[in-house]
Each structure stands twice: as structure tokens, then as C-alpha cells.
Amino acid sequence: MEHIDVAVIGGGQSGLAAAQALLRERLQPVVLEASERAAGSWPRYYDNLTLFSPARYSSLPGMPFPGGDPDRYPHRDEVIAYLTAYAARLDADVRTRSRVTAVRADGPGFVVELEGGGRLAARAVVAASGTFGRPHRPGLPGLERFTGAVLHAADYRRPEPFAGQRVVVVGAGNSAVQIAAELAAVAQVTLASRHPVKFARQRILGRDLHFWLKRIGLDTAPLGRLVRTPPTQLVIDDGHYRAAVADGAPDRRELFTDAEGSKVTWADGSAEAVDTILLATGYRPDLPYLASLGALDGTGHPLHRDGASSVRPGLAFTGLEWQRSLSSNSLRGVGRDAARAARRLAAHLSST
Ligand SMILES: Cc1cc2nc3c(=O)[nH]c(=O)nc-3n(C[C@H](O)[C@H](O)[C@H](O)COP(=O)(O)OP(=O)(O)OC[C@H]3O[C@@H](n4cnc5c(N)ncnc54)[C@H](O)[C@@H]3O)c2cc1C
View (cartoon, rainbow, N blue to C red):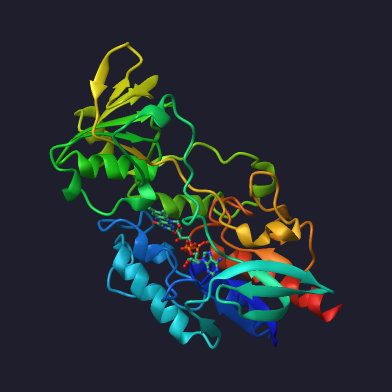
């Protein structure tokens, strides 16, 4: 069996930031990425996605986001190119088409099992596999009796296949509003949610919101330990989405109260035929390979403190929502948590 220093599971921004930080601690990471490229889930996000963080606030440590205007909002494909270049520049062993199926305890270290039967002995493990592989599908009234199409935002790419349809997008976060507004150009769309949509202004006093988050310290304040349930996501908006909702394209309604056959029933009792229900209801940490270690709670969330496993020394996480702060699962914030995790792992390994 091959022996390695640190197995980093996931080759997206969180795994690459972890690898960069581990190298700085003079550890040798091996990045294990399930897909055929090290760009995380970005290639699978919808086609028209542009970042809500400007280029200047969308970099990993050691390599600024390229391109002329640092205040522009880069397109998804620019992020893919950026991460691919970042991975290529890292002096780390990045192994694509390497899906981890299980991590098991082995003395003070770990055995990492790969799809296809490969095994690695690792002194430490960083779990950086994101959330996109585990879309959250909440139980909704009557959904199991609805005979139309039901899909998750994770499956959504572009509006054209929905042209002429009656679509209900469930959710009130950024993805829900962006997808509903985009679909409303070709379909009749309702944005349905239990709570009203809350908008945050993209620009305040001539500066992007991210400038202010940094300036007032909210971006990095270590509030993660206090956040049990992540607060309702604010929809970052330059005014475009608020206006679209005000114009009824999409229209906004309370979540339907029932569904049956091809129809949904609204709170006022009216029933209406719907072609597609699209769930923009978020994601959960995708860590099934840690189950046998006892490192997860009953809902599959990792048991951790500031990204260090509270169950198993030598196991760390990067890229969790509110891992340490508001920016923990963003391009601009993950590097800070990765540096912290790498320092801790280096200290742990030097003491074992
Ligand atoms: C629609 C949308 C818009 C966003 N906009 C912004 C923005 O503007 N600015 C910003 O900073 N952030 C943004 N984010 C948030 C965040 O930056 C991304 O979600 C980011 O992709 C998370 O990176 P990650 O590396 O943690 O996870 P991912 O990108 O999901 O990468 C995880 C990787 O792990 C791999 N993997 C999973 N399981 C295994 C396994 N068992 N073995 C091996 N490999 C595995 C996957 O193939 C994947 O490549 C956005 C997110 C979404 C969904």
C-alpha cells in the first residue's frame, strides 16, 4: 500500500486551498478528485452563472484572480479556468478520477479507500468534498403525489428546455431567485417559499457589498461556533432581481399547500396545473466516506470545531458553510481556514 502524508479529498477550491496551505507547512498533500479535472463543482453550475463576488474578492492564496477589471463579476467559466491554472501551478500531487469511498482509522493514521479498489495509508486527512454532490430535497406538501417533473437546482443548466412551461421554483436564496428570473424570460414562473425573499444591495455608497463586509470585519469574524443553523440567505442584488419580482416575472408566493397529479394547490385554495417543480433548496455536506469513522452526526454534518474534527485527531475540513466565518465557503475565505487547518495538522503530526 502507498504511504502518503496528507490525503486531501476533493479537488475544488477548498481542496486546492488546503493543498497550498499544507505545502507551506512542508507537508506533502495528495489531492484526490473524483471527476476528470480539478475545478470543483464549477463546471456543473448553470451556464449563465456570474459570481456575486467581484474578481478582487474571488482569489485563493498566492494567485490573484486574473483579467483586467478587478471590480467585474467573473463568469463561471473564468472561475473554472482560474482553478485549473491554480491546480497546475501548485507543486502538489493532484490525482483526478480518484473517488474516495471510505476513510478508516488505522492506528494514529488512516486508510483511504478508492473506487476501483485502490488504498492509501495517510497520516492525516482533509475532507474538502463540498456540498454539490448532496442536494437537499426537503419534504414538501404533496410532492410525492405530484406527477410533473421535479428537479433540483443542481440539475439546472439553461432555460431553453423549459420554454412555454408553467414552472414553480421553490426557495428564497440566490440560486432560487437567479434561476427563477432567468426562466421567466421563456416560461411562466412562480418563486414559492415559506419565507419572503430578503435582498441585500450589491453596491452600497458606490462600493461592492464585499468591500463593506471586509471593512466592518463581518467577513472574517469567527462566529461559526455560534451559528447552529445558517441564517436565511440574503439575495445579493443590483436591483435587477427585486425589480423582476416586483414585475411578477417571476411572481412570488407562499409555498403551495398541496400537490396531486399534475396540479399544485396554493394557499388561497386555488389549484393549478404545473409542468415542473424546481427545488432550489440548497445542499448539505457530502461526506459519506467518513461515516464509518464516526466523524458525522445523525444528519451527516461533520462534528468539528473550527474545521478540526472533534472525534478524530488528524482529520480536518475545509469549505464548510460557516466553518469559522461568513466567508468560509467562498473563494476569498477558504484559504484562511485552510491555513489554520494545515498549521494544526502539522502540529499534530509532529507530535505523533
Ligand atoms: C450557484 C452558486 C454560486 C456561487 N457564487 C459564488 C461567488 O460568487 N463567490 C464565491 O466566493 N463563492 C460562490 N459560491 C460558493 C462556493 O464558492 C462554491 O460552492 C464552491 O464550488 C465550493 O467549493 P468546494 O471546493 O468547497 O466544493 P466543490 O466546488 O463542490 O468541490 C468539491 C470537489 O470534491 C469532489 N468530490 C466530492 N466527493 C468526492 C469523493 N468522495 N472523492 C473525491 N472527490 C470528491 C467533487 O468532484 C468536487 O470537484 C457559489 C456557489 C453556487 C452553488
